[in-house]
Image (cartoon, rainbow, N blue to C red; front, side, top):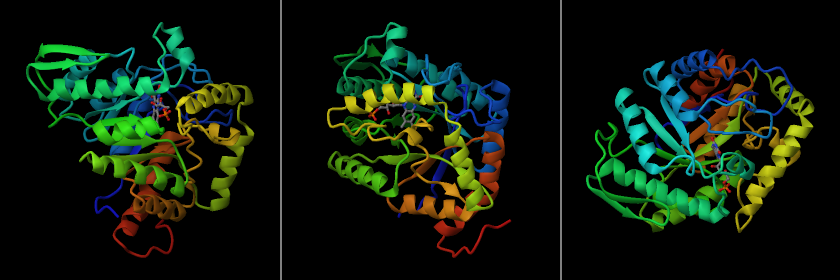
Length: 364
Ligand SMILES: Cc1cc2nc3c(=O)[nH]c(=O)nc-3n(C[C@H](O)[C@H](O)[C@H](O)COP(=O)(O)O)c2cc1C
């Protein structure tokens, strides 16, 4: 098991409707004031990262969306230590713009920006904004060139690159980012193409929620491939966390979320993502096997099963760490209250367990 303490990130709720497609009451807002306060709470609670989302349109109830780079900068300006990961989508972004924009933010924020390079799953979104829709593995070929170009621009002077998608001629970016060698590059996706790309060029592999066995299979494949390439890769796993004083309370909340799911929105989302998951040639992409209940949390966050008492959750986090996970990406129902609760009741138990100490029950 890694000696480093496991890290924690939370999803920035910068799209409306929270992180579940359900009519259950959610005291979470997508507005900027709520998000600034949440970032400050998270930083205080011991979270390392916040991850913002990019959507140009959404078919599952997330009708309003603030843009990811803009909100990431706003959250960095409102915090002191938190790193914020901005989602970047090849197509709408090109590497020249992204490299410049993120280098400037890195300069302005003492080196706290990171990126999540996403590859696109929603054909309707690409059509709506007039972007060509590439086949699944072509999307990853483009993403890989995007990352290689970003790294080149960020680390070299007189950068020249002859790709199929991007070309640079003797280009020198000034100023470069503060972070050395460059801001961290995360990527989202679970297919074979996603793992192949991560094992060559990314710093972090972000995947949807899954069982410990499901995660282990991905991590083993990823690390074998990365080792063959002489590349080091870290792993972050999504989880929708429901921590309550008793397991019954936590399970009841999950049940209520599912009972109050918006069936039309979940089915519409399911239709799109099944296309996306099945579109990867081997059929292993995100959502390829997700049930209706799974899809109520749109990144399969219930599957990770961080639902129960603080101690149960802390034990399951340490079990994920034992199979090679470096970071938990978390979503919550009522973000501000639950991020604070997590920092107070769950995180200290994780640290105790990581240190090999026996924990009988949650510390009040
Ligand atoms: C943690 C995580 C975050 C993601 N964030 C976004 C996002 O903000 N916007 C987006 O369009 N896609 C996002 N995605 C989707 C992926 O980039 C990718 O398109 C999708 O997972 C399908 O890829 P796959 O076939 O390799 O599984 C995210 C995926 C993961 C796992």
